[in-house]
Image 1 (cartoon, rainbow, N blue to C red):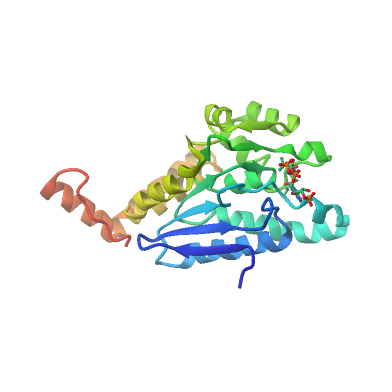
Image 2: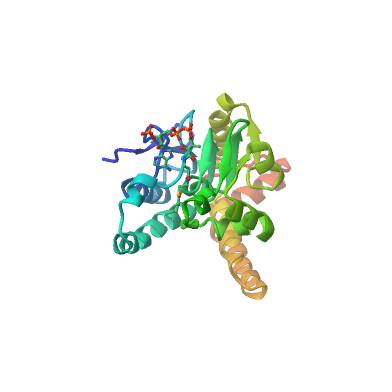
Length: 259
Ligand code: HXC
């Protein structure tokens, strides 16, 4: 039974991965491992159609546990590094839409955690950043890579080289977050949006795969992947449901089965 990470699913098939390690949700090896387990649950449980990643109403996550890291030797860190990346990758590869709901700080590994989601909804008092440089280290869970792909090279360098915290409004302007909301509305808005995606067709999974895997490829290979996945949508019940519904009732009326 996980101590700091809970997965609960509502009646609409929306799972919440809730991180809970007071006072600031610092991410120690146990938490990363529990997040990895949560990712497997969300990926494999057919009753889960979309996911919200939340750190609770006060703080998303203030990053890797600096006190735990400070006590580690190079050899210990080297040995645990692979496991950590695997946990982060498992979250990023959940084949369902995931929204990070960010209240308070999302710093260092916390910001990197949010980057594993498809979208980030932030409270207007949220602060995001990659302050690792101030500790004499660099981001190690995607902050030099996913962040760069999301906001571009210059903005990523600004964040990583400077280590400053960015207000939600600045994060919105640079494309790091997608919505800025009053703090007590962030989680609800993320769940609401996730419920919308939970009603979507099986093809949402294919769209996610095409975009996330395609962006890592040269254009020709990525377009071939797109063609393969586009063609594969014709093997789904939802493609038939969607097209039949259009022909009989017009656009946007289909009720999908996620099959
Ligand atoms: C361990 C942390 C922590 C962290 C805060 N605390 N952040 N403990 N790891 N990342 C602890 C503090 O020591 C303190 O404990 C308590 O939480 C509250 O923090 P305060 O500093 O007193 O609160 P406040 O003044 O409100 O400032 C909050 C804060 C600040 C802005 C979040 O604590 C801060 O800057 N934290 C570090 C953020 C950071 O550098 N993150 C990157 C980590 S490196 P006590 O016991 O004194 O009450 C990283 C690498 C990822 O993430 C690479 C992946 C492997």
